[in-house]
Length: 251
Image (tube, rainbow, N blue to C red):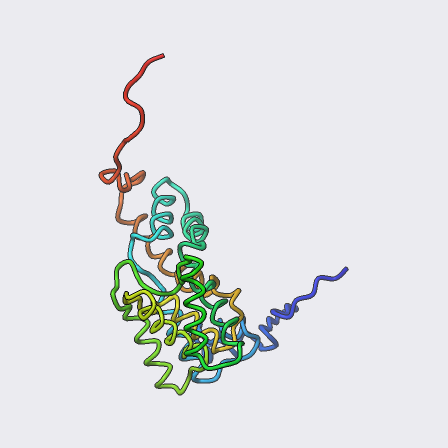
């Protein structure tokens, strides 16, 4: 049985990505636009290309404290090569770190497909999550009271005339969370990305892919900085650890 793929065609002296000669794309498409082409199958419009670029820049890094950054530095510090360190960082990305884009996009896409106005849908969905005592992904942030990246993504969407039902639903749910919980839980960058990629027609299952594509650049930077600035086998967070096991004992 032959293995079929509609992504890349390779022949002697020629590489075609989604049907386009790679040499024609080089210098004409930005990396973000090429990523859009690879994931979506078609070249982006100017508005889509600009939004795609902003999405990838928004999550490129968030300091040395996230699990993925620490993992990349830790593996490098143990004497492993750059690729192993970056791979370790990527493998740390999961449902609790970087997974909110996927989770949130799934909610937005399923709920936006329902009939009715987004305000009514948002009220119902928020109520369902509260009744089930489930945390709504994509809202609130451990550091930022208002995520500046969310504001910029929405500003850019308005500038380029982009946006739709999913982004409107995301905002409506933000209001409902405050009404129903009595707390301010603003849409964070993960939720904003989820709303934007949903309006751009991307499947929610690509959510983690967007985070990986963006954050890998930051992981390379962290691993390289660890390699070039720190001594090997560095003791990470040792001062923050406290032993609480059994007292000294003997056999």
